[in-house]
Length: 148
Ligand SMILES: [Zn+2]
Ligand SMILES: [Zn+2]
Image (cartoon, rainbow, N blue to C red):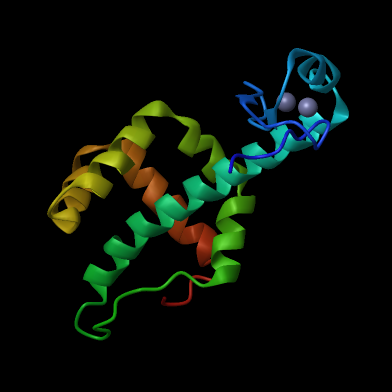
């Protein structure tokens, strides 16, 4: 069974709003939805979701980075605490950096690599943008400078 139309709640949600991705059933419903406050609200939710997804991706990158540094002390590696993740999502500086296409490229590269730690090390060494990002990431989630 498919989704219901988010506008009239009756028809089948066969189509998607290109802006906010809600589903709708027909042209009249889309006309009603287009430019509405509901579309704005759904679009904002979508943006927030994307940003927290980006933060989670960078958390995964950082996890690899830290787990290598702490390998001797902690076999399980590093875990991002929920409030640290919140801080990452809230950091405008980080979000700004993450919007850069080159940085996303590096993160995706590391994420897809077989040897993520080695790829990450190379990325930090060879890419100033990325090493700045990792630095900022560490500062953001760990503002007191206490050892993680
Ligand atoms: Zn409808
Ligand atoms: Zn919409």
